[in-house]
Length: 412
Image (cartoon, rainbow, N blue to C red; front, side, top):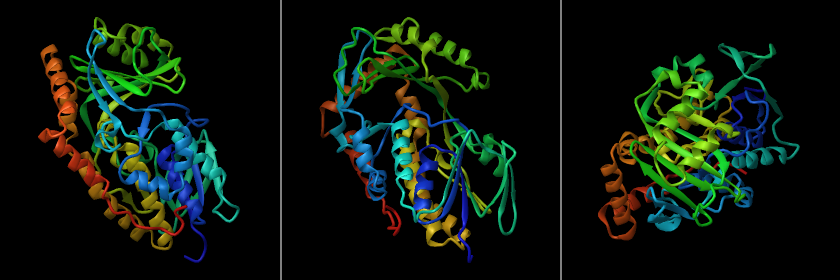
């Protein structure tokens, strides 16, 4: 291909902005469309662990991440009276465990990427960033992809990347219905910001975790001590009536948690006024291929492992690094680039996605006796460094950090 290629990225979240940054650094003209009208601030805490930390370092993101990272020191498990039952510090697995030593809100990590894009030198690829826009029609041809946007505008691109999340509209348009590739894992998850409940005794940097029958409630202090993030997961059969119905979602949470202790009454009182209420299925995405013709999928759109893996953001960054690097290495041979991207990343995705159904069941015991047993097991687990299960987990987590990453000349 004699002329420079043009790439469309659908989705202005972490995966989309990361791949756009790397494409632009390689001199590739890139258009990004994001359905939201502006960047979404705040959100759930995400972590960098294993190979994603290496990717962030190679992409030059770590200075911005360090400036914005949360002071998260670990988790404390609490019973209904607010009593501490177990303490799990971040350093337990060398900063790679259930709470990583580098945690940042999703919105702040996204802003780090946007800041890097804004600071690109003049000889980078040309950027066209459009908020409040998305793809309405897409027609793949032998030489290009013709796109019509929601605004009515049309354009032609050499490649299209779908980074529009778990409920990807581009995936449905190009690959088929959502149900073909998604697998409900038995739980729903919600999070939202609330005023810090009075009398909360959480220490700075520690996330409180309170399991109740069928659900888990966590409270994560924000950088501003006046606010905290409530994180709730609840195990029930899938209910399609919940999709898009905020009133029904909040009613479910209230029904599941009313009558339980700790700070739950304060969380339920604050929930209707939360400015950032989020609710979705705990779902895994499995696809036989992440590309079709000139379209490739990235991040949760292609291989969401569910929030239970703790690796969603990690896989988004690693995938963006690999996909952009391979496109830049073979801009005239997109089939080779897409194939290399999948060949290198799929083994890690397969490993991450293993056992997520069991994780949902284990974290959500259905009875009070089951909750008591879970707390007892966690207590033994954190207090006995030589426990066989802890030793096994340490070895498995360590293997993720050994994932080989290719070098690309335009990485940073």
